[in-house]
Image 1 (cartoon, helix red, strand yellow):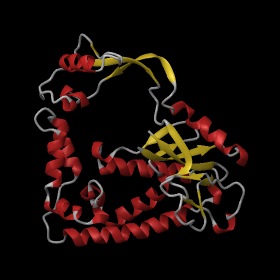
Image 2 (cartoon, rainbow, N blue to C red):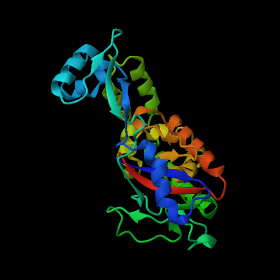
Image 3 (cartoon, rainbow, N blue to C red):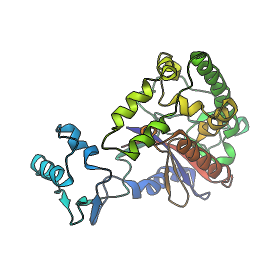
Image 4 (cartoon, one colour):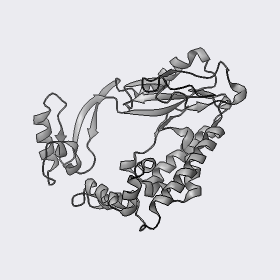
Length: 301
């Protein structure tokens, strides 16, 4: 899986030192770093462990039974253990902060940023390499992979995305006109979380998708993303505002302080939680010193 990570670098970073600075900033989150053994606890109920589904075990399977099945099937791995309180865990040495195994400046998001017209050609602008997926795409005017915030035209990026969002919202209203109001994914997710043993996540997804408005939206290619009900719940103005912020923020923000701030996954969270990430990341970027670098990095995990 590839993710757009915005890496913030100190204002004293030299143009020729961008690649090294990005490498240093990302290093704490490398998959290949090893640490002293630590306890990695399993989360959620036993019935949701991936091995239960993979090996078609019953929904009433206990952690002890999961561990027995897991250890028999994956004898070369660190064994799954169960403590006296019935909690399952493994002792592991992989980096608990690991987030990526490969990265590329630009990559699939080559040209993510727009620079200000007066900054075009400035040597401080960052231009990495394209991915094989976009290597033949035509170059866009003023596009770059990063640079000092003061040279980037974040407002132009937001304005363009806001116009696109307004058009999309109108498409949604047209698609669901006359249909019963639908409940957002959050409603079904909370029901599952309240009683995961009798109401599975798959059942929650099926019930969500069965709503006429959701089914109608699924027939429209532009509306095929997860949880349009939740995405549009706040109304047109709110959706356009969130889209403007989202135009810049990417999926992960790696701050100057070294914090890896990640957008929650749609299947695991709610539209409001996703919006909170976007708002937080946008506010952080807007508050940076104009000389601080922000670089778009394509990270694989």
